[in-house]
Image (cartoon, rainbow, N blue to C red):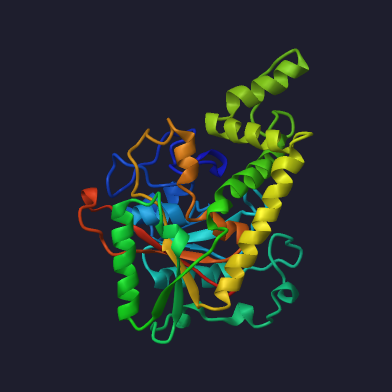
Length: 349
């Protein structure tokens, strides 16, 4: 996986790049690309990953898997290294929806009374939530209503992804569901707000890796050189880039201009998505804007890597659950690369 979960390609690991089993010249997505590659290569039946801004769902799309990001707080974060604490979620990667349901059922059973990363029964307002048999909830689509977020199918999405997406939407209609277009005006604003907030939290969470409290260390006789040497030489380029950006947005004179405004955008995104879900059983978007890129392409252009998360970050901003399913194969996609369909649902639904 990417170092500290920071990346969308699984190329920034200290152990080297992970390759996509569908085409080893391409990335599997990230940051949980190692988990996705292992399941796609049939090295295991299922794997867990962490989803901060799409790090389970994007690899699921690139590797032709089912990737689930549960409602924020549904599963404990105990044992995880914090990247952005208000976004991080444990997710699952499987080859089928049934396996996904079994995994969620098993992970949901573990509940520790003192665990502050997991929402309690009272906060969920449903004492029966733990007793849902997720495997039995798989049902036909007759009578279901879905909304396609119009802004997710506009500029910036490749023709191959759109062809696959609309073929999948037509299949959903054939299975009995009613599907119509819906507008979410805040959709495009989620990406910049996410990166401001997530990187701000990351700069705080990763401050502990100074060579004294946690992490490896490089000896130095002078304290300033000790701190700077440890962080500059032992952290990867992408991690340092995100820490610097997060520190900047939290610095005096800029917190109001960036961080506070991003919090307001987060509220807008959350409120709009939740209001739309009062009208529909789920919202549909492509899982990614393009098929899996070649190795070493997005590392040269970090902004392109950040934009790759545009389809997924709004779910994390709003704390909602989402699942990525393998869509219909689009004609003309190189090497028969898989393309994913994202379904966004009600919290704890």
